[in-house]
Image (tube, rainbow, N blue to C red; front, side, top):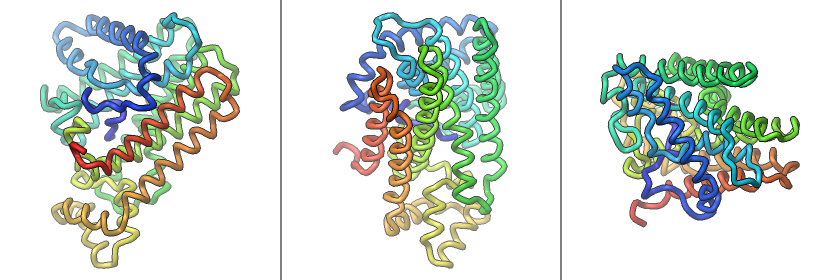
Length: 347
């Protein structure tokens, strides 16, 4: 799962503009979240605490925790301990998926430093990801009712299912746009959905609002993953803070390749299909040129914007409530990030 840079760009590259005042409001919440996460390192066995600490870093913007806090937003200076705990849970699940994903992608860099697989080896990293998953569920079980744990457990299973489906389809050319959407709904949008849903629920909002906020999260998550798949071809590694160009090399048919395949002539299409199947070396530079010639960027960016519009529509009936304008600020960030992919480095 290439999840990435809206939340995890290097500090110098973090989005500003419309989102800056929104995120400024979350500084006390994120500070409390960071303190809570750091305190959890002591819960791991002494022999692996350094490894857990390596993963529980504070270099990312923590988009999923931000969704928890914004979805449960009340005009009060108090930081809710329950929201902090749920934010920590979803972040730990997310971090576990990153550890596993980097192993499968053979990625070198995550958040501008070596991946856990590179730092500790892939075998240890697999088990480290498992330990992070387990601790997330342990924290979810600390709530007085089983609802939170049940919801988080189901979402974690769905995230893992999405990863399994995508892994089994690597090198397969029998993938449709509907198949692609199903995978990203599971592997990425599910955690966005549960972050928004649980945040709104713990914020005490009406059940219909909780449902709508969850739908917002799901559409935003789909948009986010499509953006990330676009960035794998059009991004710049220093900006993104992670290894790029891994999707083609690992035989993943994401939306940019699906659209390109649809626009190539028969001979060019057959060449690309052979590369996806692993029967020819990947020719990334060739396909980047083809993507430019066939305006693949605009088509994929359009899919991102469609999902952003659907996310905003889900919140429209609840626009009078405090979370709505703050959550919509995240839509502005994502729009800006898509536009930034077309901006030359240093421009």
